[in-house]
Length: 454
Picture 1 (cartoon, rainbow, N blue to C red):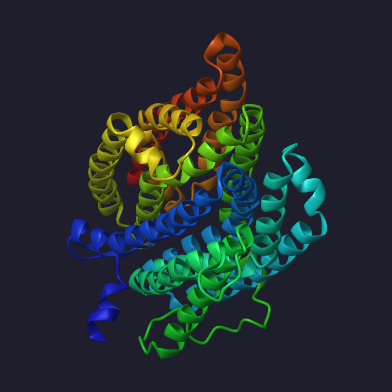
Picture 2: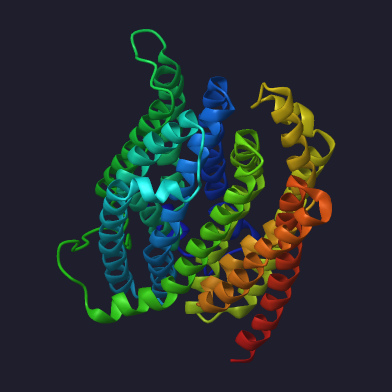
């Protein structure tokens, strides 16, 4: 118990060891998230590209929902971590309770909107194939209707991370992954006595694993006897003081807007992609999941860096912030370089793991080759967003990200009209990622100097 209490403190000890100890379980959890999605796509891929495209479109709304929960998760995590850095654990508990209350409210509201307005929402993508539309409808109905469990898991993971505990979320997500991997073939393909549910089976498997993850996180809270555990004794049914909601909103709203607008931009691009047929949509969906080998890893390291920076900012230790960022940067550059090499040099073997139609394989090869060029820059962007957010600079992150991500739409239109066709959309994604990587890196360097001068 003594060791675990010490592990909650990110403001002392060897910097790389402290950061790596927090980051590795988060990165492993991110790999589990990648495995979640890739497992779904691998089994659904056996149903054909139309089913994959339908699940991909339905999954866009799951992605859109993440922007809303980011308000509570990011606002709660940053404020709770900074309070922990100041050793004000009761204040951190108040932030945790307020964040979970907002999370539950958002989950109920988003689920209700998706169920009630499912037809006009799907109508945005102008899906003309009946099979693709039905797969999207069923997948969205189940996963978005019960999104509250995903929401609570994300916020609880953020709060665990805020106090320096990334192992418990990893354990919970590992159990969820195993469950999902078992249920996927049973429910999607109808193995043994189970009915063949196709896209609905994938959705049920996903939600069932999310419910299990939530249960494990709750059990671990009840079992934990750590003295300064901020998740113990929360008054979830008693409104917190207004200042806690305001502070969470101040940090969380810019991050939520960034995530939501980013998804909306991607939805517009997906509509553009849909003009090239179901195979193109399927490639975008599966390609995005394959790309998450770097995306989720960078995002996981971003979460660790967020908590590390926030605690040390609260403790007034800017030198640890600078050294922690530089250590994380070296790790992410090395990892993303390996992903780039795999995508650029071996796109065809990777594509064949998920697709069986020759024409779709060719589209996927083009996607992986082009997207692979920007992996390092995307990783730098994501981890830097985590560091800046730990300093409370979420508004700055949002302005940069929204502006540069929004440029993808006119750039994609320009490149496709220049004769690049579908490849023009992929190049728009890559070019913008390269620019964002440079901009965020130099922005953090500038912000460091301001923090150090205080």
